[in-house]
Amino acid sequence: MGHLEELNSIARKVAFVMLLLCIFWSFTANQVVSMWLEIVPLPTGPNNENLSVYGPFDWIQMRWSVVILLSMLTMLPMVSILTYKFAKPGLFPRERNWLIAVLILTTTVVPFSIIVIWAFGIPALFDFTRISGTPEGILVRYDAASIFSLGLGVTWVLVVWSITTIVLSLSRIFGMVSSGKTRFRNRLLAISSGIILLTLPVEYDGLKLLIAIMMAFLADVISQSAPVKMTLWDPNVNIDSTT
Image (cartoon, rainbow, N blue to C red; front, side):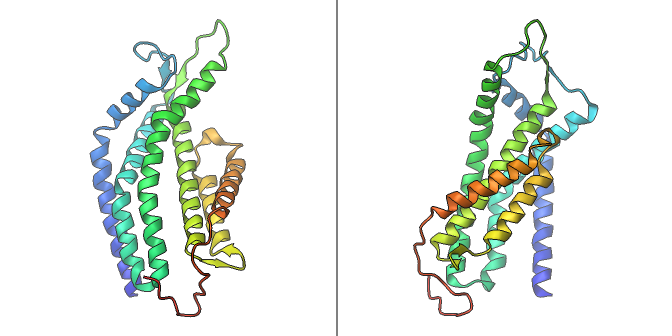
């Protein structure tokens, strides 16, 4: 019961901070969207007249997707600290070191990856599709909500893939290997694939299963290349003296 009460306290703190951050970012979401559209290499016209929102709720969904993404990005350090404090009493020293490494890397790599994706990756993708050509004699208009949904989908896939790869790779480095396989490997890959299947936008319908399988496969293959730096550790034998 004590653990459940502590977890409930953490959840309430996270929810409260998330609410405050959503309120804060809601006032700047429009400016963030406008700034990003300026770097997208699509022929939207001088005043974005070729950019449209075809449904009244699409803009609301797009705007709050940006707000939630920015809020989660801002809240990552706090979540990492609270997660470590909650898990620390029940971990062996090697597990604590592994958790610290995972949290530090995810807190730094994930925000950096998101910035790179939105600033360079997605504009490059749109530039590639634009070069591929458009129908002659037909005015091309772009759905702003769909553009952002595509961007959010790419972001979410890469974030889940990054976290999965980091966790599996560090597990091997810290010697958390059993029978030649990383501990909790199958469960983590199943959870990551399920998250992709459930959360990708409708623009990815028909590709969700393929994307989930490829994400899990690449994360597993890349993590297998990580060397086992420390001696294999048996969690059933409390002889871990790593500091």
